Image 1 (cartoon, rainbow, N blue to C red):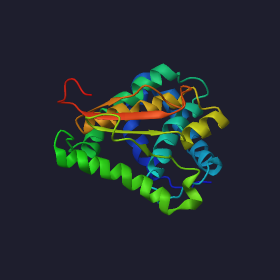
Image 2 (cartoon, one colour):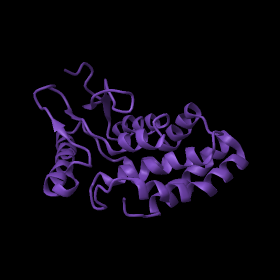
Image 3 (cartoon, rainbow, N blue to C red):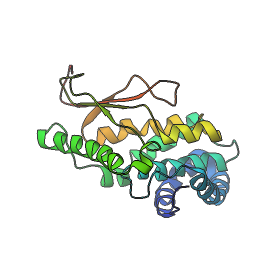
Length: 214
């Protein structure tokens, strides 16, 4: 089980509530946000532990907030409208405040981004007790001249969603990768995700000033 913390749920729902109310009304929003904390805690208790200090752990803690809200609505929140809500929230000013400020068009920012990706894999290599449960980074600098490329063949969120019935809504969380890449002035090119039945989740991240990346 993953170590429980309520800080991700508390912070994200504080700012997300506005968009839920606009889309679904006060009653559905109130119901979902009342039931979701218990669901969120239960999800963490069922999730394989990947290490609370794992730099990728925030992906689980964050994604489970969205999944628990969807589950708590008992069918009153459909996947496509929820995608719109999450996208609006992730593109809001408060999200930009926390995730903006980087520009991978600058070589030094691009290198720092690459270093962060490698540091996540280095953490997994240094913690063999979690290595077969966390994301596996597979880097290939020869695949593209521009930007940065890597892929996963294992995703704890995909494993959890398939086991516990969240696969329908998981792609809403996968879409967040496009938005977070935009915040660093990049474009994510992706052909496959595990959630959609692919063998890998691929990430080719290219600075947005490169018009015809190769």
